[in-house]
Length: 309
Length: 250
Ligand SMILES: Cc1cc2nc3c(=O)[nH]c(=O)nc-3n(C[C@H](O)[C@H](O)[C@H](O)COP(=O)(O)OP(=O)(O)OC[C@H]3O[C@@H](n4cnc5c(N)ncnc54)[C@H](O)[C@@H]3O)c2cc1C
Ligand SMILES: Nc1ncnc2c1ncn2[C@@H]1O[C@H](COP(=O)(O)O)[C@@H](O)[C@H]1O
Image (cartoon, rainbow over all chains, first blue to last red; front, side):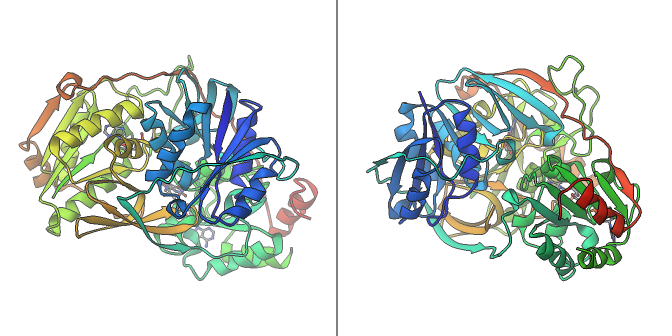
């Protein structure tokens, strides 16, 4: 049977997270369909139909799906579920919001944050903030998964030519209403797909001081991240939080500045290829995972780093 | 208005996790256990709503063996009015827990159900959404602000892109994120008082729920260790290494 991937998008463009999820899906079965539920999302459909490995695109384009509320999207997915052996979404806040509802309506379990496909019924996922790795086997008739993006490479965005099918179901979410949205505007790469990230912690001291990191980020084309402590202190918004309960990242280069290295932070960045830590405390646990550690005051080191790049 | 808060007993977030030598599970013998941090935030939010006069009763529930009564007592000491232990084996899957919580929520006719967004042991992030689906209630997950007005909850949610605000009709399910509030500590007099607050025990058959799960654990292994790195003496050395050794910048 086929695998259904739920597309991550904002009605304008297909998000890269979808490409990693399609990769996971192709490792389960060769027949991969993508569902796009949204409003006036024609460009997303065009992009999805070209993704390598996608054979069919299901389209639910209606005002009721504009904000991808979990209440009705989950019912829409359940409506088409009978055709599929697996239903997968990226483990983003959208996927995490909707997929457990899908699983409960289908009376099956959900496997969260899958990082590896062992076989069509056996999957690997981190537990305990990544301090243990569980391999689990499921005999559920429909297997519902969320996929950790950093666990899978992206498939090519071009090269496919999928067939299209329009879904006519109009399911409204009458008990839930979208009010407003405050989206972070940034010209920088997205945190979860950036190849270089520079993150600041409580050691940054203030939101203003994050400007120091911006100088370095500009030169490296990097995304900016943060620890929970920096977000809690109001230095930067919540969407920058990296960690067990924030975003999981795995760039080629991760630079941790004024971050102590609590397990909850490490859980979100330990998969990075090269880790650099800049901290004035030589005993900070972050140095245990860093490939290159620099014991220094960040207020000296960061300006010097910027000027030497 | 009645609020039901579900709390889970988990390994304390400060404990270093060890995997058993036979790779069957994480070793929990003689390990410090605490209330899941996101559940502390859930309890705090419910108590604040009661203190504001929005709610008149806060009921806490936990699914597990007798030891989770300790977690329930903690919630009572923080200010919950009464507690329910659903007697079950520890480590039930999320769907089974959700079925039990949904049954309790129906029996209690709760107007608002608050759960943590995630258990720090299973890292599942799914129970609240499942409870909402089973009851056909609306949900507002990853909440950083909750305002109750006109029979609705206006909830600001932390999303990957920033913040989103939704209005959900009560009864509804809310799951808590880190920035919702800062939980208080229980005072000694309140800990003493909590010992006399009501704590009921219910069985699966009391609730008419059957549990079971098709997922089995094949193995639990430690994560791959990162090879230790080096300390560099200066920014210049760092840049040199990144360029010529790691080759991650040019
Ligand atoms: C349920 C739960 C979930 C959590 N989820 C997350 C999560 O997703 N992500 C996350 O990051 N955390 C998370 N945490 C929090 C985590 O436990 C730590 O509290 C947090 O990561 C600490 O952030 P920090 O390293 O910035 O701050 P601190 O631990 O205070 O460290 C600051 C560091 O800055 C250094 N420093 C200070 N000044 C300077 C200077 N001038 N120059 C150089 N170095 C300096 C200090 O030496 C210190 O090492 C979670 C905690 C809980 C309980
Ligand atoms: N055994 C349990 N007893 C009570 N509440 C639970 C239990 N398991 C999960 N929960 C609730 O569901 C939330 C999310 O858990 P999870 O879906 O396991 O990550 C937790 O923060 C609790 O509020």
